[in-house]
Length: 125
Image (tube, rainbow, N blue to C red; front, top):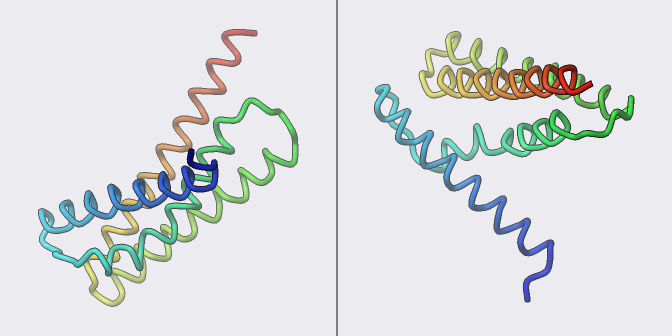
């Protein structure tokens, strides 16, 4: 029987592989072909941040420290996305521009999920 750690490691690898393959296909369609290695180097390091942010955004715990941590990670992801996007334009690297767009979209998705959760909680109260 697999331990929880083995399952989580397998799940993380699967998420990274699916994300990498999807981003590779999207980059190719947008005219910026890239290897999986290039994509992993740029985006995969931020996947864990996005995953943690989603977990924090969707928890039911109203602990103030978790909300502060969530807000700090929102800001951090926003800064990473903006920096990557800017760096892509400055150095004329389309892959970095697409990476910035991906991170911005991920941040928008997490923010939307947070707002929907908040609205749902207000309706249920």
